[in-house]
Length: 189
Image 1 (cartoon, rainbow, N blue to C red):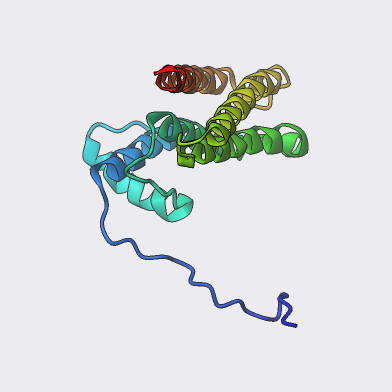
Image 2: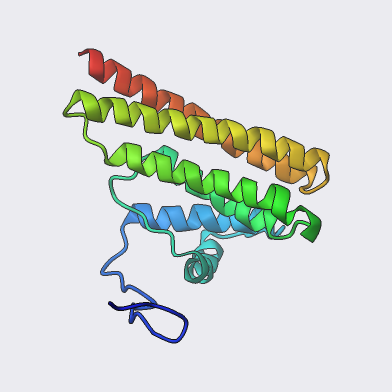
């Protein structure tokens, strides 16, 4: 029986090469660069500045984008990138309480959305599972909203950071609700 530990290497590649980048992939990188720039209080004048910065950010964040990715998933990834960037600057005393929760809610939400999107609407079981994943993602977004409010109240994040998180959260929630309504209409026809 093989065991893996610190002294034994698994031999996995560090970087998986990409064949080509789609326009959606580039746009997503630019959106992530904008969110990170906003968190770092940077401003850019040209779109080229974002594309240059997105190359640096891409090395750090390796976010995978599919051509079939929904807008709600892209927006949630942008929200997660912003939350992670903002919370990394939070005081150490909040890391165990707020920072981990905020980051985990974002990542859990992305996980639920991707799972829901991967399910085909070909059977009743898949439809129910998709609805369940969408509902779980909705709950994670609501919990993220409340936890970010608590983080603001306890001075873990700044007011302008909370406002940005709230704006992005409302976009994600509205897009998720629209997706659920779209699925419900498709299910009835």
